[in-house]
Image 1 (cartoon, rainbow, N blue to C red):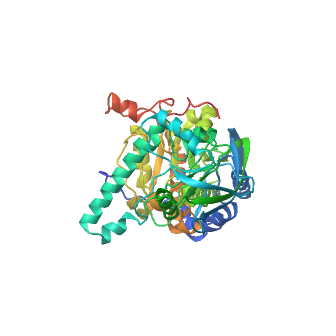
Image 2: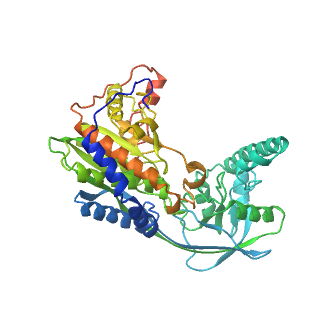
Image 3: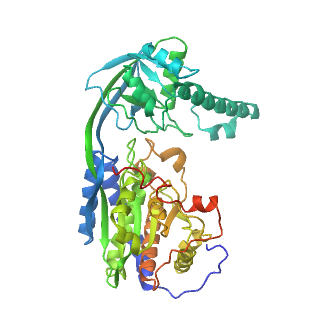
Length: 509
């Protein structure tokens, strides 16, 4: 719905009607999803799987008669993931549920067995340095053990108030104490993986590191990265990490065997894949469909961001059928290295000033599998006026599910639309229904094909194709005037310069 705007009756647009029909009756999304998510799998930047995925994108687009190319954007550290065998061998034997962190070194296809010890509390960094000789040859547990691995909703449904309150206090205290004493006391950081602390302990000769970043969900393992080059780093499920931690805490001296197959491949070229349907009347003005192609690799990268990729591909396929000669050029950009800071989209913006100059609008999607319910404001009043008009021409089912509240503020980080918003461009984020994305699939081992809600993704592809068509046909070009209602700090936050957004100041990778 357009908040504050009355519905306006419109005569059916034959192009929009055909988009709706093809998206529903002859969708390619499920077969594309199987190829991408099941056969190619995760697409972490710098890996052979990402390169295979780039080539797959180009082949699919060319099969549909759409020009596509892989455009080199720089290099990224290369890595190959093989198997992860992690076994508790003392005081009892159990195969543990876990896997290597991204970019971890392996064990040379041999067994490495060592005692697991807990990272102690430190009063200051000097105390940490004094402790380091004790870490030599050990596997270091660098996360707190959660008191429960149940989803908290289970406690809301079943626990007494006393138990709920007690658990909440325990979790708050545990997180605060671990962060302030066990980690910050070292003088280093973990980041989302092992950070600078891993590099320092690697220098001290540790056997490896064990982490756990379990979310508030059943059975999830979150995978991020390590910068270690010698000491491997693995992450365990909440349950198995808690087991090892309690054994270490009680003095049982647990021993773990690692056999990890991985290769550090050095710097490798990375590529955005860009597909183009060239405009016939205004080829130097652009409608851009934006999604990131890279993923973490705990699973298949289905909802982050396989679904965004699939909806943009399907939208382009449909547009090529129903609207092969657009007024403006339509681009679908599949960006890389988004998970480490949106480098791929920022590099594209840097390399293509002509696209920035002629950009009519950009639509970005990057938050799960659900149907689009909202559209983020770009902070540009004229862009808002155009978008409001386009939304009014959508079929009622799509129009009524979407909430748009006006200009709002531009994206300032978190996904690739920020790489364009920082240039003051009309970049809109498409906001999807959650489907437990944050708890269950974001960067986890559960982000797999079966989590895709195909009816919602089909609907989203139709929506994007319709918006791209309407934006291309719009007789006027969106101006860049900004909303001046905010002042001072609000303006600086709402319209970050590219350097303030952490984009162009990052050395070219």
